Length: 328
Length: 215
Picture 1: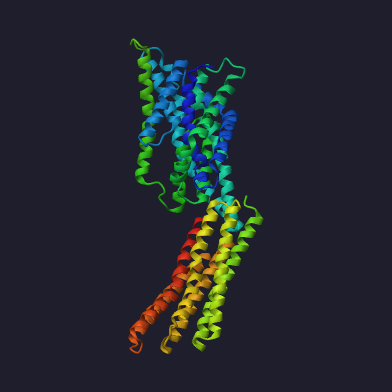
Picture 2: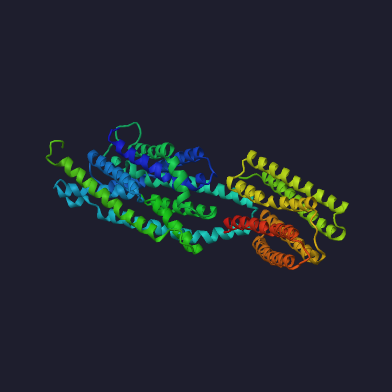
């Protein structure tokens, strides 16, 4: 296997460390589930999701990029730096947006340098991806609006003892967390190894290339959760969802359903954006403003800046690499 | 999933606690009734002792519930809520016990002009506590009446506050009561009325517990 895949593994590690909170943050921060249990469940589910349903995303990314292994490396490196920079600035990050922005940067850099033609840019697939980004928070909010009244009514009919209610909520949060981790693996594995799969980095193996790409991608995300997810899960989980257990369950479920849907159509999206959409949906139902106006501005800024920064970094990296400078 | 056996055991222990607390406040009320009939009689002392015993039983039971909660794998949120509730609630039997001790130790004499009002204050506060017990029981049996009971506690506390002020005014307008006894009586009135304040504090915790689980 090509060593440059490590740039993708690094990106996957960051993805696992950051996005674990979206699946199990509430359960862990409220001490309903031990961190170790959550991390193991997350690692298994995310790898399983990648292996079982991750292929569609790989194929989408294969259509968006046409470069070789160097391009794949620069795409992943630019996306990883973007992720780090945005996190350092305290802005919300979408690794999918960073990856697609970087991919576009690489492609346009080649077109600009005359090494590729405009036909290498698949605007139809790009348009589909951007539409899905917009649809992610909206979809999650709509699912929340639809599911909340139905499930709340069912729950009320059960007339549960409050200890049983708490136990049920814990079970539901764990089940939704597992599903969310599965959906994350299925949806986001393409961000990790999609560009390398297209660059044939997994072709010299005893496993079929797509299976190896999915396995490496899934395992990288799992590794990120196991080694770097604890702090984020304990703090972010508390910060994002200062709401009741039932609403928290609905948020995780809506996020998972949304992300799983996009996994099925092969478009990697942001789990964090789905969570924000679902929280806004809960706020709308309860007549509360769970996300402040300032937070919405910051989120939008993050969404806009991420692909732009990824694009610029990748563009410049490829320009430098292919120029006549002594190190190129 | 939280086992039926665990749930049953915790519910049973809490119910046992509530029964002791209920009897504690009932003896407290009977002690006052007895006091207004016969003064510092043997029966008054016996009822004060019964109040002590029930208060001790409440303490023991609360400690056992604490241990049970930590030994069994109860969900932290349920555990914290129950322990916080009982911790606050336990102040009420303590208060009842202390009032009777003060009366016995300080031999507080209550003028006949205040007796009716004081007895009314005792009844009001004991009834407020009874409403609280109903609300606590409600949360354990998924009753929809919890919020209604919490509202009732608020009204009872307001009534108690009004009566407390009336009684204090009466103490200070009665020129036959010596100044040192006025202070003792004012303290006694405030301590009795504090039972409904404490009940309201517990009701606030119950309200949060209910709202958190309201869908």
